Length: 276
Length: 224
Figure 1 (cartoon, rainbow over the protein chains, first blue to last red):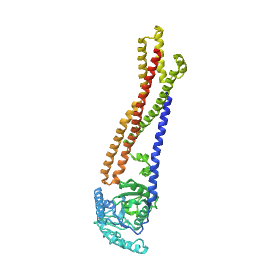
Figure 2: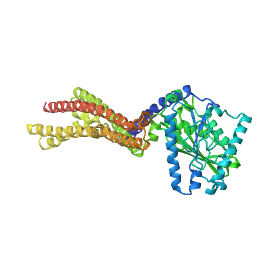
Figure 3: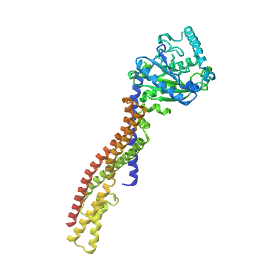
Figure 4: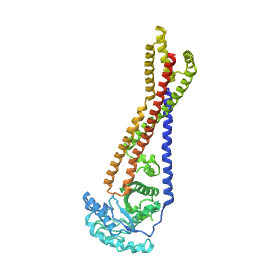
């Protein structure tokens, strides 16, 4: 038995291992694919959404001027989210949380403007209602009354902070400065797009405990430059379906000029209920 | 956010490994080396044992048919890679060296020949046994190496559960299933090694007893 036959055996053994490895991976791939294809579907949910959102810490920090307020604001936000969840477990929520970290337009920067904003808000609110009536944009009234501070109501039991309808990310936590309508519609359209692109096996619709929060960063020209999981659901398939959905809508239309910033950061909360 | 993450669950074992941690990957690599080497040894030993057994049968057959040792030497001229022939050559050399001093076959000569045969048999046994110990090593250590990978993976999985703060099965299951791969591969490497090791030990005994028979036959024919 020479050295040559050792090499021969080594080659045979390696080939055998490669065969086994490929054999173990191919059937699994087929199986998973079938699972995906047969049961996944996506539904257009227009008209079925009740917006609730909370504005990110941006304007809070712009008014408070310190990082401290920002963290407080975030705490408030999470508290609010959990509270809301308890109150309305059955409700289908559209979860749009604007986390625009860029400062809003300059005029909101000084605390002295706080008084003015309420007036502004009221007039804005009125105007928004008018426009919505005109355009029959979406049925807001069924969502319940406004919580008072800003924007069309989402029927949320306001916890002091501003709540708005339709994924209209309006600054919350005291400042109550709404985004202009164009930006609100822009964000809402993104959410609709994501939901249309989002597909999951049917069995996931009943898994109530899955929840992911994703923030996306959009460049001025509409390209998504960053996708970040604030919270993962823990189920990889679920998280990846969200990622896929977001990637599939890239690029988006350009950010509306009225938003007045180079990038826009929007947070979305994904619950399995959104799909069916 | 790499794109590769997307394919995590679309593949089989391979893609699961892809998403596993570095420790699991290292463990799998080590186990793969163990497995490849042990299978190399298995294939090599199967060939070696088959050849030795066949050679032995042929040798004993020709030994019974032929009465002159010189004829036997001429038959096996080229077949130097025959364990039984080496047995015979050793005896033949021992015999011829004693013959030059003392032409008659005494009891002393026979004893000397017997010793030479014993040494040759043990040398041949060593040749056959060589590297079989690696199979035993694989059989013993591979499951433990795999288990190490699993324990490490589960440790990681639990830490992650702690960080996420959720305990649903959907969170726990992927990490643990990833971790268990290493044990599975360890067992896959160890089981053939155990089977082959025991099989070869059994065959080795058979071949050695054949060699002893052949050597006794040689001594008998010399005595005559």
